[in-house]
Image (tube, rainbow, N blue to C red; front, side):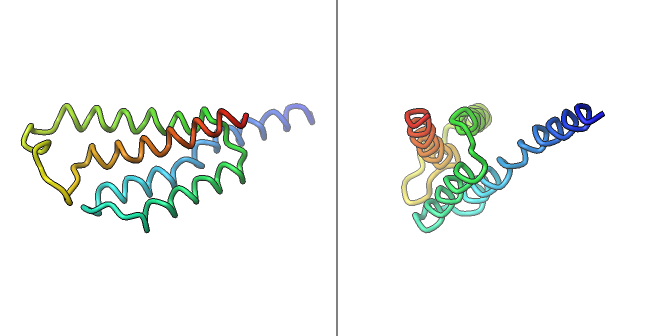
Length: 118
């Protein structure tokens, strides 16, 4: 009976592991969708929060690369459904895909550092 309870608890914990990714993804999407200009005052606290999640929940590098895969998917969708005129815009207004690409690069750097430390 005890084994069955332990296996159920482990399954529930594994199913809840997905919810650890929701806050960073929502913060990134909020930054990309609601702000036209990029700001270090928004970027670095989100990165520090994600590093805190890595330390607190002992997230592996594969989890960070999963977020990178999600960001790649967003860039792909944006590229397919955007008009060519959006790529001709000038700074300081960065298109959606450009801001996602910046986040992708930052998370790739975090993932590589994580993989190196593992």
